[in-house]
Length: 436
Image 1: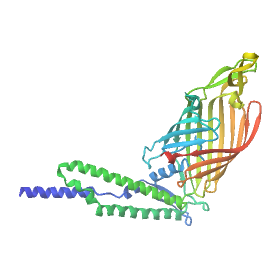
Image 2: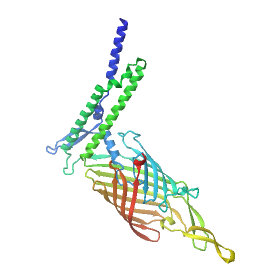
Image 3: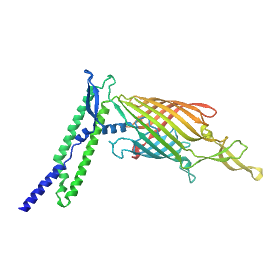
Image 4: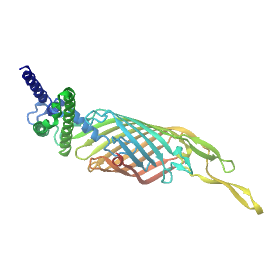
């Protein structure tokens, strides 16, 4: 009799634990994370409040929008690994990004840390080794820290001043459809798959540990369903243009430090022997960025850069080297060239330049083509003002992320002694998907 009671209580306990370890729908947790939104009824002008959007879903939406602008090699990217070729900077960069979400797509994007190696190119070729020597002056490390502020989504209509009640109802109706879908999927799993998922519980020797493991696995499945629910809601809002615009802001601090020094051979005149000058091409940048993307395919970007960089007159004046030859008197009084090297005829000077650049960009036609003026004020020994007018074109992938960017530019570049007007192309290419 005692044995029968023991088995009965054991069976009841097993059934109770099985009931407690079913897969839960993510709907209750998802709704608990929805924010209250106030809107004005167009007809009655009365205000009403509803729980509309999940704040974790908005985190995903904002993160997807950041980095979808006209990205160059120094702009914000969220790809885990990236490679970029920047024709304007004449450099190739290979790097990695780490962000505050740490693999959790619904966590808020608060910061991004980017590290990489940049290789400067000359004559359209990025030289790493030359004649057996490591060209450390062409290679450097980049480090950038980006701090992202809270974003904002505006749901007012383009043709109405008030918050559109119909738009609110559409989002709510779609949300009810998602609720029904994910509740049904959880019920289906519990009915058709849970028993097979929990067969190991029948092993009494491993009973406690198996229950814990099962709970963890079911928790993971619930979290995965939560993420998918958020992605579906973002897709609905994006596809049906259920917002007016999305804004975000971020600031970045970036440093480039070459592994070695550039060596210049210079002379003030042709009658003086060349001497070596060493130059460390360190640069640092503080940038502030603002983004506003409209659902109708128009976007606005503002960027302000404060640059501090090591500079010299050879770079500012874009001087070209010339050949210097050493000769000796050979047999039969012939002149023999004993040595040849390249050098610059200039009164060499190196200094620190501080520059402020302001660059807005306005994009149209599904954020593909735009207009981007910029002005650069330089302070210090080099104190000239440069400007450019550009027509940027951004070719994006299926996810809306920029891959190939080029800009038709007309710009004025000032040296110490002259001013040059240039018309041409600037381009950058991102290869993140190839190495992820």
